Length: 479
Image 1: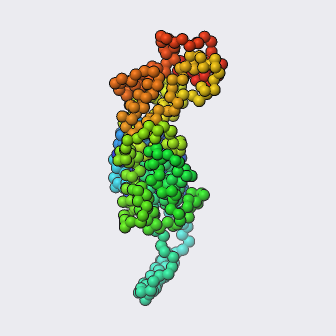
Image 2: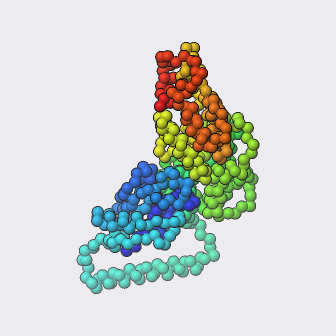
């Protein structure tokens, strides 16, 4: 029998889910069950028990043919899985896994081709055997009696409907199906590197609006004109007032949102991002608003449209780390532009024994490179003797703060300017060096032993300085 395959990978437009249409009703349950495995980031096969004794069988593997060029440098993975109504034997599991490994969709969303064959006993619920204690005739009489009762009920309901068709129904409204819009929101959040915790559609909707508001980043806006800060200030101050995130996402009450409320809140979010704070006649559906939000939350596209001559001090102090981490989730467009440059920086940071996570983004590498090469605070507290030592003179060349334009690096031109400023502070004229040449020149200037051998060094160098911090810090720059 055929069963639906569900796949998560990076498509051309970012991370998303592809699935057979039959799997749509259980998609959120599958995402919730897969969450711990996707967070762990370990490749390999998995088997997860789900409610009703169902089994989630699948694999996580390196996506050698990742469709998103911006995600290739992050060693992106592809997750393939199926939901079975019974736990398969080892032999059956191997056969199924071999089938799903050949499933490689090229676009997110429903795809009728995402089906594989599995044994019928795994794909359908087998009815429990019932002991037959009734004679055949009695069984038939019971069946006819049941049918007559059901027909009587049906005729009564039909008569009631005809008699009262003009009378409004005052009973509770039928719960609306929020799964489609919640699924799109979950996919969008995943593309921004945000793992969804909720297991209900309304919980996902709460998370979505809770993530796209200023309250998620700070208590009050900082007094800064930094582009990252201005990007965040476009968001609404808080999630919709009538919708507060519950303390326990797993216990969120189903049906608290209506489709109308979701559409209205999305339209207001779009209005904030576009710079409008007044009510408009916009009547966009939720799907259209989500597409507009995705476009408006692309930092690089926003920055290109809002570039203006910037004073140096606008970038002099980086925003708080939560602001940096938040905004750089939305910088997918520019990541690939800096891939070769940050590879050089990674090599240099490794030689300097500076800890760096393998999955660090290009922008995190840039930050770490520049902050490593800034004047240590403890230099000012060193003794008079230490201030005459070559160790102290070596580090005194570094700028007081991380080179200003390196914080946002909105283009290669800004990065080159930041590197030139740094190289000049180290005492070398940048000239017409390329980006790669500037990095190599900075690395050469930060080789203490080569620097100490240069002509004209007359500072005291015999013995070690008194400052322990100075001695420890110099070690990483001695090859």
